[in-house]
Image (cartoon, rainbow, N blue to C red; front, side):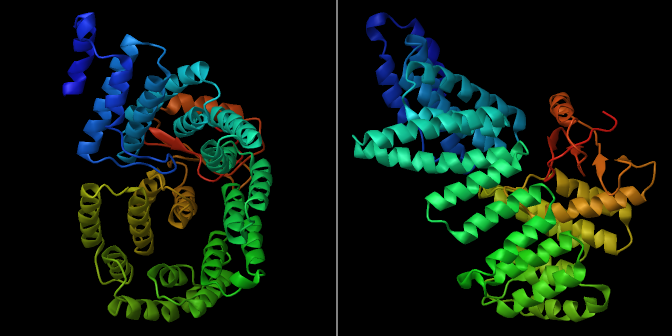
Length: 466
C-alpha cells in the first residue's frame, strides 16, 4: 500500500526531497524474488504484495526518468512475475495485461540498451506467454546470435557463462514455439541440432521428437521414435519407454499392441505405480478386462507406502470402491488443499474430469461423460497429458454418436472433425488465427471453448462453419 501511494508523493515532493530514480530502483529490486523464467511462478500473498510494491516503485522511477533502462527492465520483470502468478490462478485477462506491460517495458529497454542479452530473452518469454510465437521466435533468434557474439569475444567469463546458459534455453524455447506454429519439420531439425551440440542425450531427444509427432497426431511417427529408443542399450529395459508405447498404441486404437506393451512395462517395473496398471486395464481388449482388473484391485487394496493419497483415491474410484459423487467430493478437497499450498491445478483437473468421464461412459451415461470430457479439454495441462489426448478421442466419438443436434460438425473426410463450442473474449482473435490456417490441408480437431482456445495437438486446420 505504501508503494502504491509513493508515485504521487514522489512527483509532488519538492525537488530537493525527492529520491532519485536510481535510489528508487535500488529499493524496488529488494522486493523481487528470484525467478528463472522457465516455469510458471506461484506467488504467495506476501510475495505478490512485494512484487506489486516493486512495480509501483519502478513506475515512480520512470516518472522521474522515463528512459531509465534499469527501471524498464526490472518493471518488465515484475510484470512477468505477476503474469505468471495470474496465469496459474486462471486470471487470464489480468495475466495478459501483465505480460503486455512487460513487453512494452522490454521494447523500450532494448532500444536503450540493445546489447543487453537478458532483455531479449525476457521479452521472448513474455511474447511466448502471450501466444505471440512468431515474435518470441524472432527474439530467441536475436538472443542466440547475441550470445554467440559474446562467447566469441571471450572477454568476460561471467558474461560468457550467462550467454551460454541463455543460448541453451533460447534454442529449446525457440523450437517449442515452432511447434505452436505447426512448423514441425523445422522443430525436429532444431531439436536434433541442439542435442548434437549438447551431448546428444537420446532419451531427451526422443521425447522432444515424439512430441512433435504427437502434436501432428502422427501416432506412427511417435511410436517409431519410442521404438528407436528401445534399440539404445541403456534404454532397452526401461519400463517408461514401454509404458509410453502402450499409451500411444491406445491412442492409435491398437488395443492389442497397447496391452502387450503395458505387459512389457509392468514386467520391467522396479517401483510399483498406479498409472501403468490403470491404463493396462483401460486399454485392454474386452477379453482381458477381468484379467487386468483383478491385479489393479489388489494393488489398490494393498498400496505401496509411497503411493500418494490422490493416486489411492483415483485407484479406489476406478476399481468401484468409491462412487462418482464421493470421488468428486474428494477431488474438491484435493483442489482446495493445492490452492492453499499454491500448487498448479491444471494437471489435477485434467485427471479428475477425464476419469469421471470414462466412468460415466462405462456406466452408460453419455451426456454426463460428454460434460466431463468437455471439462477435461478445457483444462490446460502444463505438458502433454495422455488423459487430455484420450478425452479428445472419446469426446469426439460421443459427440458424433449424439447426432445432428450435437455441436459437432464433420469434415466430409472422416474421421477428421472440427468441434465448435461457444467462444468468449478470445473468440474473435482466435477466429482470425484459424482463418489464417484455412488454406492448409484438412486436419482433425479444433476446440473453441469456455472463453479461451487451444488447438490441442493438431497441426492442420480446415475451417467449417466459421
